[in-house]
Image 1 (cartoon, each protein chain N blue to C red):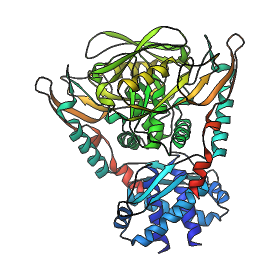
Image 2 (image 1 turned 90 degrees about the vertical axis):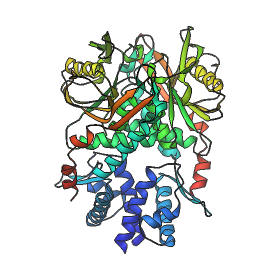
Image 3 (image 1 turned 60 degrees about the vertical axis):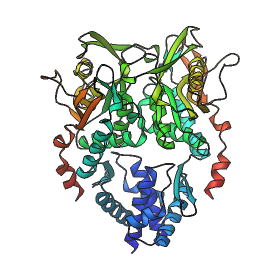
Image 4 (image 1 turned 180 degrees about the vertical axis):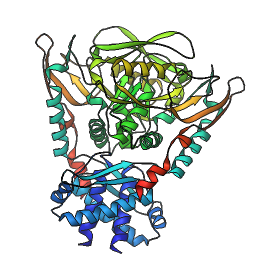
Length: 283
Length: 283
């Protein structure tokens, strides 16, 4: 019987981890393992406690006939802090400075482990908010959107700067690129977003904020709701950006392209995330 | 003590699932849980058997002082078959036919569950082969590359059709677009690929194969090795495509843009994957 329980909790752990934010009825597990609901309940208590202790996330129980259990990925304060400090150190490397004051980040945003953590962090911040779809703009925002979407278990949509035949009819909006002050155009496939959907906008990097503003206009154009904005990195910016409230994971505090010097620090994530809400739900 | 073992296997399961293809020394677990190596070995046997029984993957044991345990995600034949049949049915919908004989797939390739399965399938095929990096081309190939990279636990790199300042110096190659017969250019950041690296090329869809050929040239340009080619979908094509051996998950068997008819079927994946090798390793 000891092995039986171990087998069950291993498979239940895998099943739940692969389906964040999905309500799984207890009957599903009791049928799959041919076990009494009371045993399944005990299994879930063990999983819940282990997830809480290890900072994996919250296992939420929904009581009643239509109830079940739901895994909500979260990140605790110390893990978030450690990850953002580590990222800051890695980004503060002289060889990342590109001509024109740009920063090379493609390697980081192509590492599965980095993307996993970025996705967890952003999804954790929105764990208790309504998000129906994650939106980003091609190209570099895509891996971040995909990872956030994974941990929220919601679809993501890709806005494009160039129209493609394979998108079908599109809606387009004009926006002013904050850094170059040029007027540009972005497009999104008509069928990819529903009216009233709650949209979380994510992108890799914010300079002037023009691209983000464009996506905010796109959300309005579709009569959808803005759930929030999150970027991996933001540059230092003189004055106010013309964008609604946003969260950054990393901020470039100083960048000297002449002398190849760069200093990255954790962004607004740590101060804007209410870790207590998540911690409270753990207990 | 019963709960103790359960707690351990839950946390070990999570840890291993999040680190595919990574060798974890037994001492890591025995220190983390303050448990004897013999207990950890027993835990791993239970996890191994559960993973095998549920088709989650292989838990490979590497003996010796530098040894440990490694989780290799795999897909069994029936799961692969079921997924590809389901995809074929979903793609065979008249509303997916776009003018010019293109197929709308953006919704599917924005669903976390679909991407998870696509990634597992391709990674499973390459579970026992050397892959150092996954390569794709912007835009639609990115989510597939990211998911494959996740399950192989390797980085991915993005080739672009347009040069971007944030990539630094790039290497560019010309290629003939198979469908339009135009000569186009693609670029990859110089620092993103090492000489001699084994590259797995993935993309969303292959028509003439020109884009894939371009990426093959790119691999050669970097003096890297081609590990293989995998595409989500391929159209029917008269004659030979000018590309090396590749695997497709889905094939569009017929498409009638006038009458909005489309018929998708499983591609070459099922016949090209040696499920026995994987099954054998299970036991």
